[in-house]
Amino acid sequence: MAAIEATPQLRLVEEALDDDDLAAQLEEWQTAKEALVGPRQRYARVDAQIKAALDDLGAGEYRCGRFRIRVAHGEARRVEFERASSKRIAIKLFTDEEHA
Image 1 (cartoon, helix red, strand yellow):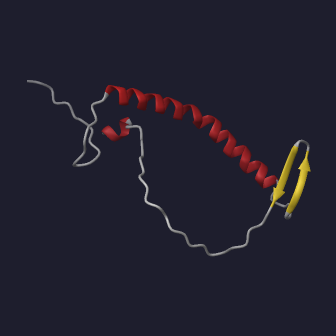
Image 2 (tube, rainbow, N blue to C red):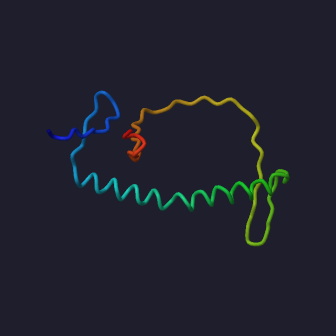
Image 3 (cartoon, rainbow, N blue to C red):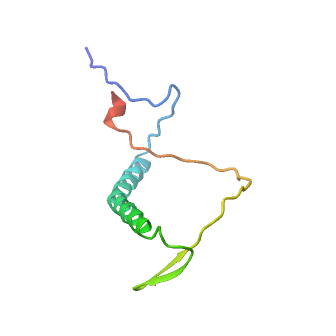
């Protein structure tokens, strides 16, 4: 008897894209995305630290070494705007946890 192989499915109705070129591009996209994770996390941590160190500064312009720092405070206000139509494309890596 032939073994039954489960195929992961995201929705009851979904379309599978059988395109080797697209799959290769998606693999390249995933590799590039993973390469950004470490540097982005480091930047976010350092950015939060420096902004916390500058939190006590009042509005104005300051200089520290080769850096120019401008602090401006914005008053709370109500804004209204119209949003143009858009198309969102979300790409997520299908992980082993989703296969279970």
